[in-house]
Length: 175
Image (tube, rainbow, N blue to C red):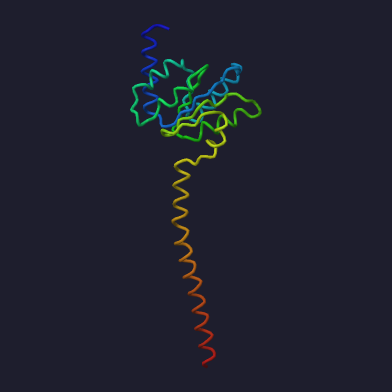
């Protein structure tokens, strides 16, 4: 790879890391070409960009990022072969990895970057699968906000029929 090619690749990766709040670093060594192609196809269908990267180039691409992004903490995950999955959803890559693996152990999760938080190790995959997406959290908040209001409305409705029934009974007794 020429110096120009490396520079171009670093710039491309730099843009990916700048625009990604969520990415996963995996190790897919030992997978057959057919399995790798299947993983790439699955990721493409779900809108995840998957790239096998040279570790040094990936680190160079992240070095100039702002400190508050906390990208330097993930540098240690870039050892051996590294495949990066860039996503707009923090949970989706974990779900894909888990479903894809089935009974296999590959691809192995080295680390996940979730909006400046970093999860190291394959044992974190279950935690990442259980994360709630932004849409799920918004739905939960809306449900919680609606719950007390719906209880008040139903109490008022049931109370209204009880009062009406009570008035009717009193009226019948008075006649």
